Length: 283
Picture (tube, rainbow, N blue to C red):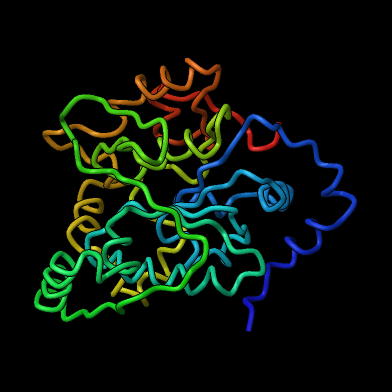
């Protein structure tokens, strides 16, 4: 049985109105989890549902019906428990959609799920750790046709590394946003990258209420650290700094091909700190 697609998606995607929309060919959108997503207008949702270049992060698809936007691609950079549950439930939800989004995930999941016999020693060790630490035993295989893998090792505090293809190491600076930016640069070539729901100035997500009933999806350490700091964990200061420190370098990478990193929330921390210009979703 297929998941019911939000009414505005079916109403507009195949309508003359949708066909007349003038998309900006040189733009793509990264969809985060900030509460500003709850303020999107129906026109903005319709625009994004019909847009070819939308990449949603982490837990988004587990709660997407609250927003009503079905992304064309998905991203998961975390691989510390309970991200395994997010990975599997996202695949379950994505499998029920009429159009299957491409799911970009860290190569960790390729080793753990796709070919366990090829990585037998590594596989047994990691499964043993998951079971002994968390009483969690993942399945051996995952069947989803549109999986794609990237490499993003932790390099916080080291030199800036920016991948130009999925065969190269992607940028990582203590948080999924860093790698999502590098991924969008690769899969949407020659596009301005526009951030939606990347608020950062507070810890709450658009699915905060729903998460209270799914505490098994919470990484307690990072969740509590963000609430103590009263901002998103991505920008909680550590000795390695944050991804915001690298925004000027990311802007330089985009500028070399004539593009920009922009944000569609005027109250986002990246706008108020002058790291991105604000632009509306629909120009």
